[in-house]
Image: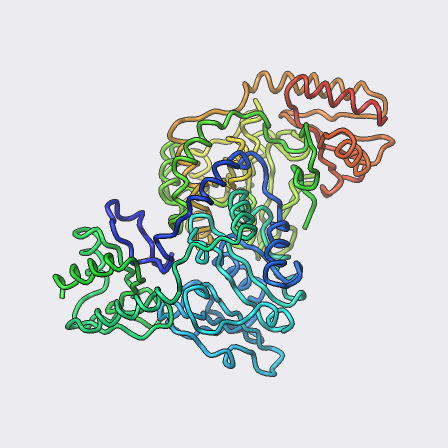
Length: 314
Length: 314
């Protein structure tokens, strides 16, 4: 098992969490009340395939319901695509999300995370279309699409293209990582192939109910993207001005920091156990080493607290 | 996608549900209250692997925590075992649960459902151990273990054996099919191999929380097995006495019925749309045809209602 962020369960006394890229201050009270009103759905099997939710989302994003597939989080979608196309050669630019597959074969499947995790940088849309080579398939993981002002691919365009798969994370859009919910869009032939590999009942009843509620009620739980980008730039520049730290450019709410003299794992442990602050040790990302951490913007006063605490360890 | 039972979502006005083998009258109010008190865990990622729940269950069933693996329902476990051992020849006696894999290869993996779905019959424990052939592996799906008085395999014995995997369904034990929760036990070498195939965060936060609550508080939501078996025998014999119906013997709370003159799909549609009663059309089980239905025992007065309604269609 690779190391991942948001490992709160390892540390009992965390007061500030910069380790997940997901906005930590979402107001989910309406959704939570709705789930509690319908908690008795745990008594019945979910739909074997989450068809009703697929119909709702399809209507919302202007694609047909055979051009979309809902999964038990985006990581399940990634593993399912890897299985459906396991005979292909898989190409991942690093550093990137660590769950993408790495193996060789016939034809090519290119995994692109855009905005990229852990760097927060985006690729221009001209680079995101496969070449004329019919053996090339592109998977674009757009999980962080709601955390950037950069231009993103549109589902209406993707589904016309026979060699692209676009991944969306409802987990990240609605700040519900505990529920596991994501979907992908693609040409109907690709969707038909992928659905053969989906495990029945893999998305549970409460996740389906939450998805229906959020989509139907057009819920937005994120702060304005303008505020988030502005705060991130202030946060990043403040880090950059500190001796021994280099904060890299980003187009989202999170960014990489190089520790010139410190060890990332040691810094993480110190902050977690002594300060109650969780950061992401980025050493487990392929292409990075134990001199990298990843930080995600939180409330202004929380970002200030991290800056103050960090100074003690430099 | 194969047809499955408990397809309530297809029919808006069901008042009685005989289509799922799971006891429909479980009192889940304590669990539901607990989940609502902790509903805010949807804001955080679950553990990538549900280690804390594995520790709790391991302690309860007297195995080590490296001899157990929790999954997103038993169907996920089945698909994961199929992938881990895909090079083997898979053997399934029919009729049996339709998610077991059917493909050939080196070595042999035998899938046994015990008690068997859809027949409700059990195999004696002497038949449940692999032969001396080291290439033989047995997967015993013990999902319905709490719905029978027959002798079941014990985890303490299984984990010492290098060629057996035992599947347990918390979904069925605790009547929470909406949450998706199951686990398997096996020798630690098998568990280590299977864990390599588990998708991170595949079990969501609420399922993990429910599992911890149920195991820690030693919750039992099923009626006494003696009552259930007695009621099932009365129900089955009453069916058997009806002209044109043959109800087969069972050792659990559910049983197969052969319709001598009726079509199973037509009978199901009539009962669902005209009577608000859901039964399981068993024609999708390999080895059966469109003259079989499966019924699960409910409350005595509900079973009586079904008998009365059935008479109109014979």
